[in-house]
Amino acid sequence: MSSLINYLKDAKAEIVHISWPSRETVINHTFVVIVISVAVGIGLGFLDNGFGKALAIFIGAR
Image 1 (cartoon, rainbow, N blue to C red):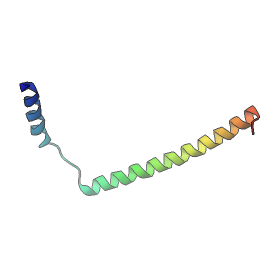
Image 2: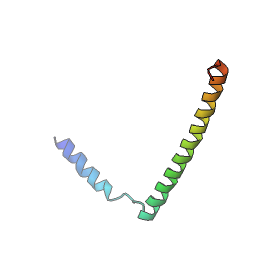
Image 3: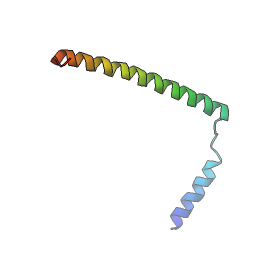
């Protein structure tokens, strides 16, 4: 039990040393992640649709 308490004390002491990003940085990075995720999703959607049509033509299912 004392090792758990020591671990929690050490973790609390280390949290002080963390340099947290500013609110503006977090918002900008979140926006970039959302834009990239949407772009990749759209690209994968087009690829999936294209490969699906190509496979349908290949196996004659049309």
